[in-house]
Image (cartoon, rainbow, N blue to C red; front, side):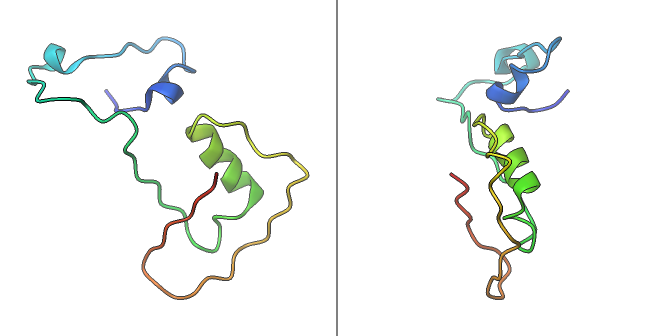
Length: 85
């Protein structure tokens, strides 16, 4: 059993969505459908292959093969938000 975003799960054959009521959970309101954390090393987040995977996970088209990003030069820090859209 795994928790997957619907967009990703829809692309994989043989999976079945299991609702909270099927596993004994009580629905207390709307269930978040897109709140995920993705961690990418700051020296790698601009690499085209990494951006392609992130965009695929987000259900977007992969960037063009001609997109040539170099690894980022970031300031020190434990975390930062990177908008790949």
